[in-house]
Image (cartoon, rainbow, N blue to C red; front, top):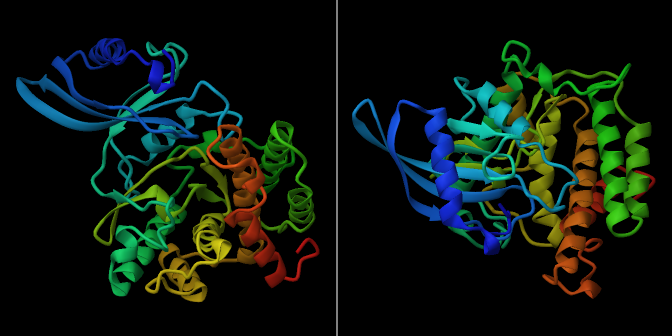
Length: 361
């Protein structure tokens, strides 16, 4: 099966998916998919919206599902591990972290030709980042008081992750450290590999190299270890009104200092406002209040937060360098626009460096 939806035989795909699901759930009968909605253009996972109808124990059940397939071509990242995402959500089932119910994962033996998984489609709306939610969209249209409540609800949800006993929940599989490495060491090593890959696809980025060198030389020596979502932003959350109903996209999950998630939450929002020179939503509380709220709800001090904010700005600038190159390569933006250099991530990295008086500002 091609993951390019323009060449996908949807009928054949559904036939194979039906047989696979039937083998996985032998108690189910009359499996049907009355609605199948192909994805739009994506750079991470390919996401389909599918409605499932089946009979179990004599009763008809209807489920709104999401089918996520691993992309077959090089995209935003050099590699994707759908099994990691699936395992994370599997281990979070039964906790107070809202994740979808899972319906199965297929790896190397996938009947669709690429790994995929099926999961429940949770209720709620996604906060769109393009166009910027600071400028338009349903969140922009909310009253400031409601915006504030939503922002704090997102913070409280990532604070729940910080409170989890990752060892008791079986998250040791995320420990990918080498000998004598801390979890932060392992993350920085991965970022250096990612930077090398991004540069190999496009060109050298000296500003990113300088930032990474500072991060490697200035890393905190003490490290509290917890579960980190890794992509903790309101754009990866579902909301009903002001309530967070689900966390999506666990491909960046890792072990490390949970303050990393707080930093990413703050940094991504700043990148989508300050990074593009637009005013932040009036209801969103300031940084100090957000940090105090996370500390109170997580029960952890936000030690080394400035360092992790620099790390977050670097990571986003690196992701945007890759995304900008992809957009230009695929004709989605003019090459002379230099989106790989001129983006909210690169701008915020400069802002954060200047705030902290760093040598690469």
